Length: 100
Figure 1 (tube, rainbow, N blue to C red):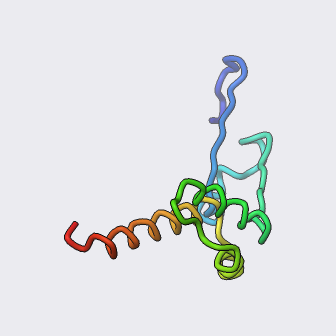
Figure 2: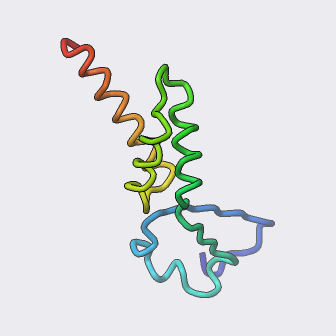
């Protein structure tokens, strides 16, 4: 990345939830112009994300269960909630159809 001739505008976008795993040399001044940090979703946002991921379910979780889930999922990202919903659907399927 050092000593490269200018070839026009280059945009590099990266994302991680493990900022501690990035080599410090990549984060030193002069490497990248900007670094953005996004906070994890709060309780209201978690509830909305759960609504999105369970929208097509025949029986989406009732409000009380959703509130309980969001309270126990503090620190989860949207991807974590998607994985949780996918796993719940798979387990429900296996319970209903154990032969599969």
